[in-house]
Amino acid sequence: MTGLIPHSWLNALGIAPWVWNPLSVSFHAAVEATIVVAVAGIALGYLLARTHFPGRGAIETVFSLPMALPPTVVGYYLLTQLGGPGPIRNAEVDLFGHPLTFTFTGIVVAQIVESFPYCLRFSRAAVAAVDPRFEQVARAMGMSRGRIALLVTLPLARRGLVAGVAMAFGRAIGDFGATSIVAGSVPMATTMPLALYNAVFYGTHGQAMVLALVQVGVALAILLGVSRLGKVRAW
Amino acid sequence: MSALEVAVTRKIGDFELDTSFTVDSGISVLFGPSGAGKSLTLSLIAGLIRPDTGTIVINGVVVTDCARREFVSTQERRVGMVFQDGLLLPHRSVLDNVALAVRQAGGRRARRDIARSWLELVGAAELAGRRPGSLSGGQRQRVALARSLAGEPAIVLMDEPLTALDSAVRREMRSLIRGVITSTGIAAVLVTHDLQEAEELADVVIDYADGRVLGQRTVTHPTRLEGPRESAAGSEEE
Image (cartoon, rainbow over the protein chains, first blue to last red):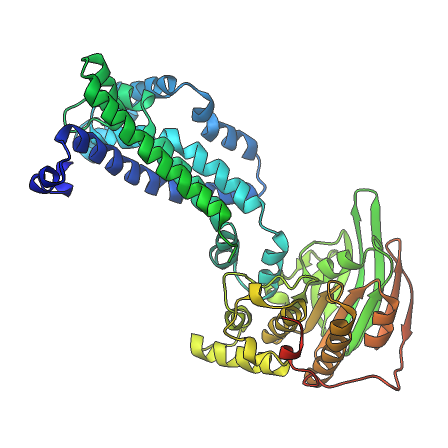
């Protein structure tokens, strides 16, 4: 995870590996998780907002559950499902050659589960807020359902969608509970929140303070970005 | 052959629409108070809502027949739609908005050329590169009219298209709509609750109340203004 920027550059910039390594792991994992969450969350949010089918409410509730559950509970279930004997673990071994628990991919999975509800709910609300008459006109213009979604609905909902993706990224990069249970604190696969926990646990308070400040900076940047999205002119 | 034959019923909550009328080319106005079922009728004609019973025939083609369970989708009905607030896509240029409605085969350039010609017809050619957010209400409705025609529809459905405009622009738009519909020969059904608008625009007025057609009358206008290019889009308020 440190290969992104050469060590000599980090040294020149005065960034210690104990800051850069967990930051790099957190950032990488959160970006990968957010890509998956954005595609799946926006697609499911669109379906929930614009189609009617039995069990719609149940689907939204199930996918939103991680928002209401303590992250450690989510982590516990992920650990038992990903790491315990059974078809899921067998599928992991077939696909990746090893179980996903205590790996970088395990971190990504935990972050996906934790951040998905944010993207889903923002996306559903953003699509539902689009005036359906835009879509009616597009239908009269002969546009297919897929083209209407891509050319009309999603662009009109873009601010809510981007805010949802940003919130999901923030949730992913800041996750501690689920990640710590699924991935533990494996060397070279330790996220920022885990590194902070370790620093406090081992009494290196100077490092803890720096790691906490970096995370405050990341959170502020995300919130400022979301806030700016709310202020920009519609088009 | 009639441009449009409608004989349908539809119940929504306590409201029941039971309407039947036949119109030829030109502008037919559905006139009546709010809540009379005029806009619902347009939605049924467009295929946005299915009726409970009845048939709808556009230019001799049966697009809805409840008894035979025939229902042609909105996409395949060849209807153009204009709403009160234009509903142009704000993230697309005026030209793109119109080009998206062009159904003819051909590349993007060909579709944009066709779109340009429709914009010229409604006196909005110089607006082609602008975003809808920078247009006045009248300009937006000109573009919406061009977009509704760009797919060469069998019929154009207009739901209170002039309600949001001030009186001077409304007068200008009435003249434009009248001229464009006459010159293209495409039939139009327009909904309004404004009597002056109904009588100035209509070849036929269909009076609505409480979900029923009260009557249908032909309108003659010795002093009607015509001509789509009488007023340029640039003359409107910015």
